[in-house]
Image 1 (cartoon, one colour):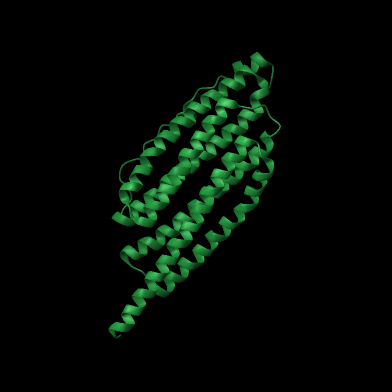
Image 2 (cartoon, rainbow, N blue to C red):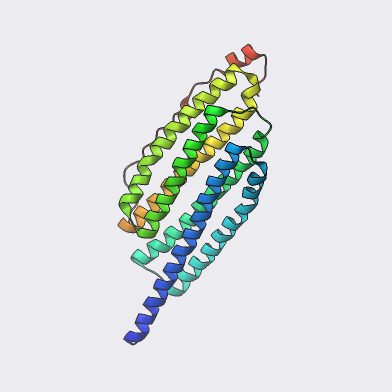
Length: 251
């Protein structure tokens, strides 16, 4: 094989990797936008906007399929190795994560449609918005770290997940208080708890993207455990006491 032909192959493969980066960037931009729009729809109790978000999720699903098909062909035809193979494998994993982020944003919008007829939840809704804005920034920075191959930026995203967990735990306790003080808030609080959990999971997925960016640069996943601050799973709830006080079944 002459040198000109080798250069052509290398150049063509670089173009393929560039296209793969562009596809991930497009998918990430859509997922980030879906999250931002779902938070805005929740704040404004905008059913029409929420319904559009649910429908728009299909484009993210389609992009995941396109990326998967493209990477499989890339592996079959180019047989990438070492750094190049890490890029391709990371792209497959990240596209799957972005698809799940889109699903969470869609699920949040479905909750917004239900919450339209429920009592307003002022301060709790503000906390949800703060969580959403923080996670949106994490997604953006995690994708930037992937595109720019920046391990330091990726590690910064991992550190910020702790703040999301703390907000989620705080909101969890606040909503439980609402429910125990006034049974009318049980349904809207339950829906907001699911919304908050979706946002917290999106934060975990943004951290996962950052870890893939770290893997691409260093050839290994981070060794230290990601910082966690979510205590909602260990919060004791006196359901029997609540049930007795309000004369209602919690089942």
